[in-house]
Length: 245
Ligand code: DX5
Ligand code: ZN
Image (cartoon, rainbow, N blue to C red; front, side, top):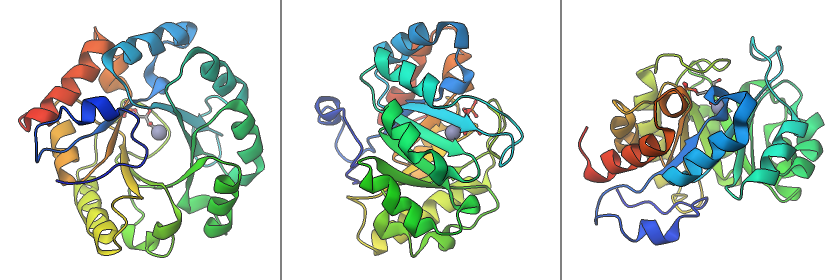
């Protein structure tokens, strides 16, 4: 696989990758971290070499759960230099773009399913100086993204139904990743649009997700519910670089 990854910040490590094998970005999801010691949890995944921090924002309407909002994102920003990848699982996300910009979000992802005017919303995120992502649920087909691909920085393929950490990976996501990779390649957007996969990724399936064509893997419970999150981040990267489960 030969993909350039626009959101990548780990240039030195990239050059160490064996030729011809995929480079990957790892985004631990703080949803599965211990919320009473978030700064410590962040230290652990920093030590492991995490590329992004994935922050799940839920509103109890679009998804059946409530999590955190801009004040917590602002606190996270104060304790890390890793870019914050903020995944909005909320209705009317456009009402909060400015709040999340001020809080320090680097990437803002919104769901295709809640946006009446997706193109307008994506432009609004980018005009505020953030990178823009579109997420799709397991039941949403990738072809629906055809007209928005040239405008986004990342597509988030949900490999679980959004709302909770610790769910089982939905296998159909693998063919969606492959199809989306083909769409991106045909549109000659490999250097511009990243594929992020979110949900149910663990040590035992991270390689197949990477091989299907993902650029960025989100792992929540797969990292924070292991005894040594720093070691797990490294292990994910090693497994993918080795190309063997
Ligand atoms: C689910 C969230 C995911 C979740 C992933 O709605 O969007 O980011 O934190 O958690 P795991 O890796 O445990 O499935
Ligand atoms: Zn998420």
